[in-house]
Amino acid sequence: MSKNIVLGVSGSVAAYRACDLARELMRRGFAVRVCLTGSAEKFVTRSLFEALTGYACLVDTFEEPISGRMAHIDWARQASALVIAPATANTIAKVAHGIGDDMLTTIALAYQGPMLIAPAMNPTMYASETNQAAMAILADRGVWFVEPTVGDVACGENGQGKFADVQRIADEVVALARTSKLLAGKKVLITSGPTQEPIDMARFISNRSSGKMGAALAQAALLMGAEVTVISGPTAVRIPVGVKLIRVKTAVEMLDAGLLEVSEADFVIGAAAVADYRPAQASHSKLRRSDAHLSLELVPNPDVIAALAAKAKPGSKVIGFAAEPSEDTGYAIEKMARKGLSAIVFNDVSQPNQGFESETNRLQFLTPDGKSADSGLLSKTQCALWLIHQVVDSISS
Image (cartoon, rainbow, N blue to C red; front, side, top):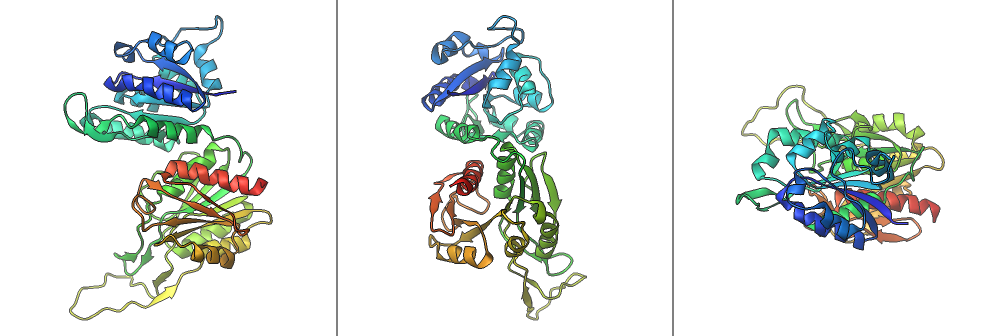
């Protein structure tokens, strides 16, 4: 039976492109039911979407295609994913603040599964503090965004606000709809972000990790029903609501926090970029500039993922990451064996749009029996979903 998608269309000029998105989702095996806002109906008609999808299209809050059945409850309960594309600033704000004054926002209030939003609007409106704050609220709840692209928009201005590519949105929906309750009742521990190793009170040694991969993994695990704990180094990335978040700075702090949590975890994923070394002595004051050379003595940090693997409960799965500056997986495979890991995730950070600070990544999932799987270049959201499925599949195979 096809998975059901509710496609919400709000009053952007880009509403006509929702027709292409509906057809693309149908090509990928989804049953698509469309809900229009009143403003969207100024650009497209319900008859158009009913002809495209074969299903009734809703607009008014009190419509009941099946007499005696509350459509907003039925549609919310039956959907594998709720997609709002295009989404205006008005609709984003209403969903963020729990306003249900039309059928689409009422469905959103009743819906409890994965939600994807693809904004489309004037660049100034998109960048406004109010809109970004509303998006942040939704992101904290685990809503996934396909950000608009930079280009010419309907008003003639140029900037970030153009509706994203339909294929890209469809790819994200496919990844999102694959989620299930595979991890219901399981506990997942994730280390994320960089560590900061102090030189003095003002300076530290760190790295380029943004924490985006760890945050995406937390979202994916939550959507699969897991109880999730994230131990994160300093990062500005938002961790979804519902996650137990433990903030740390140094590798030693990350290890100490991990040792307190690992005995309860069914899965441990070491996505953090832990500094290999730290200054032997950190100054409690600020080191002053002079003409003399300054030497720092560095000492090894503890191996966080190896220590957690050694303390993990019997039967748990411990997954490490190996970010390498080449496509050679040899060191990653050796690292997996040396650290006693159940599997390792390799990514070549020398390639563009992969790894540190990027919105996309490409992962290889390697296991001790020599098996490997390649994600291809995906958003970090899709990579996270792909990786969680690989971990689950490796247990059942």
